[in-house]
Structures are given as structure tokens and as C-alpha cells.
Image 1 (tube, rainbow, N blue to C red):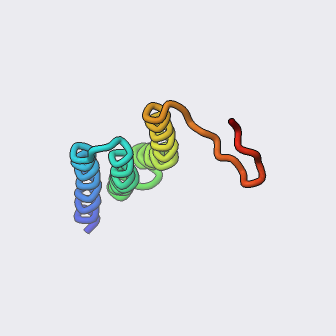
Image 2: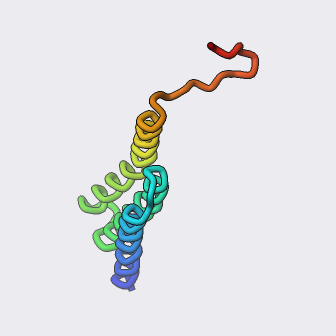
Length: 108
């Protein structure tokens, strides 16, 4: 029974990664490409790590390492996407403008 669950999780993880790659290849703008990397960077590593944990055990060396890698990817992926989107915006518009509050006078 656990082998079937592992294979299903592996299939879902690989399908998530492949759909993310396909989305990156098809999307036109950098912002669309970044948007399509979200599911691949969340579901893929999570399913693969869960498959390893089920197969090897949660307290084995492989299980702990896969959980650690999945947590790092889940934590750092949004930061990387945000930094990339910000750099793309600056490259496209020349600079990043500060939002002004309603009470501030507009700068010339």
C-alpha cells in the first residue's frame, strides 16, 4: 500500500515540475513565467519529499534531508520570485518608484 502512495506522490511531483517547465516555455512575459513557477516550486518538492518520507521513514537520514530541502524551497521560493519580479520591473521601467501617501505633497 505504501508503495502505491509513494508512486502517486512521485507522479504528482514530476507532473507539477513538468507543467511548470511547460508553462515557462509557453508564457510570453517574465511576469507570466514567474507566476507559473509557483505551483512547480510548491507542489513538486512537497510531493517528492513526502514520497521519500513515506518510503524511507520520517527520522531516517534521507527523510530528514528531504524535509529540510522541501522546507528551504518552500521558504525561499517566494523570496526569489519577488526579487526576480522586482528586478524585471526595474529593468522594464528604469527604476522602482516609491508609493507616496495621500498626505504627502507630490515631488516634482
